[in-house]
Length: 112
Image (cartoon, rainbow, N blue to C red):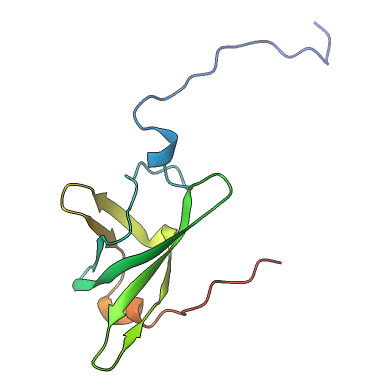
């Protein structure tokens, strides 16, 4: 066999989840929607205002509308903090506490 010739094998494809339901780190998570309620470990944070996607259409950030006594705040939550998406109840569960999530930065990180 030549070194330039690679043996041809069949690729094993998983059919457990469609590419839209697969997270960037390999977890199977359903697709979130605008308006879904965001729940931290200790209670409700707010609602999804916008979903920032990569070029491959996978979500990478979720902008959450958090109500305050005066006005609103829009923290940007990285997709890596999302632990589960409940499509039937329209809820998105994230790691962390309400106060910590609501104090995240409101700007997207710069890409260099």
